[in-house]
Length: 211
Image (cartoon, rainbow, N blue to C red; front, top):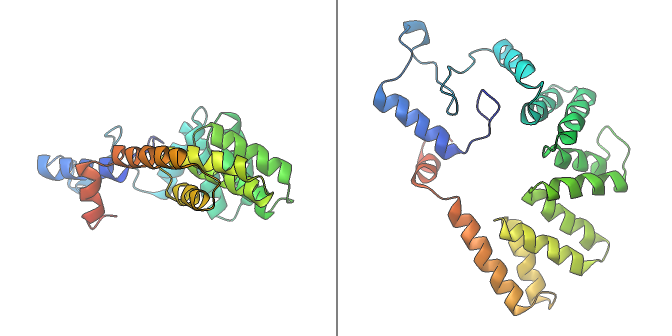
């Protein structure tokens, strides 16, 4: 998460660190010399918890990602009611907070267990392109012995690069639920999706001491 509530990968964050070091672009003021900048907007990153909260309060007004992150922050602070309120608002704006809500309704975490609401939020998160939600939706169907529906969800998630779903597709193939052609197609799509996320910066980030 960048300071302006934009999600970026470790590779981009690492590239920004290298940019600052090699270009000697630290702040001119000695007091702020070691203050990092936001990898997305290049603005000096907030240097205190109060500044962070103020920034989120400002950005959350129209930014579903920031609203979702505020919910996560409140949840970590133990204020689950506020977390649910933020996630519900973010979900209404199309954010992946649907996935967080589905997990809460599944576990009955500070809310009553509700299979219908769990399914609703899972479906919305999956439609929004969340591979983990799509994987969980497959598990939801599998637990109800709807294996054909489950496999379809896992294939979609595998095509998006989800490793757990690819494992389930493989098990489905071994169990006769997935055809040889569908398994091969899913395997190719999964490899392509994973390869598409690779970059020299991400590889360097994985090897660095920062992550």
